[in-house]
Length: 202
Ligand code: TYD
Image (cartoon, rainbow, N blue to C red; front, top):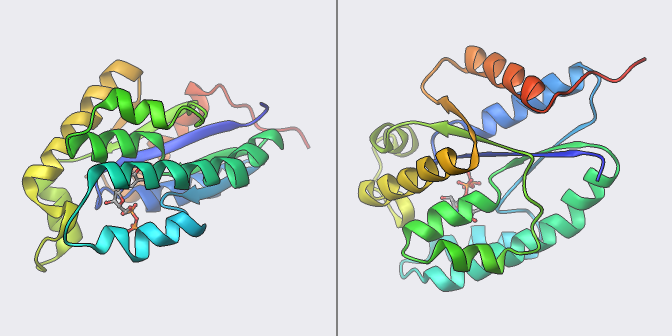
């Protein structure tokens, strides 16, 4: 496939959405075709996840893992593959490694999670925005009570899985506490050099 797939990963409150959008704008400004997208998606299963399942008090890790995989299947089929085929740099705000980190931290085997996501193309690059779980929660909650995935112990487990995968799979890892603009410039430079991207002519 002609394009490239970049995934942003990290805890809620790490600034993924801001940085993913900044990267897409910076790539476009340099003449690349770039496309922002996110998971959970705004397709059917994504809506089900965001509007219902993630708000339930009683969580079921297997059910969630299957739904995230189903959402990803639709994401890949409707957006990611078509855009890659047309040569876009696709920037996904969460992707496969969110399932590994979150559903893995919920106690499921990483091997099984990988298996049910067999259809998902491997990202060309994963960018991890890393910060301590305490800081991420602080940014996210701003004083309100934690719910669902928001306990400190759970966030710490998620971070641990992310850091292990970052080492094993060669993610680009950044300190998410750096100022937004500086972090944005560092991410752009690292992406251009790691993916060997040269701006299109004309
Ligand atoms: P999030 O990126 O926080 O969406 P929003 O900012 O729109 O609320 O994603 C919602 C939650 O879903 C987040 O806490 C992480 C979780 N999640 C998983 O557990 N597994 C997955 O595979 C994905 C994509 C997300």
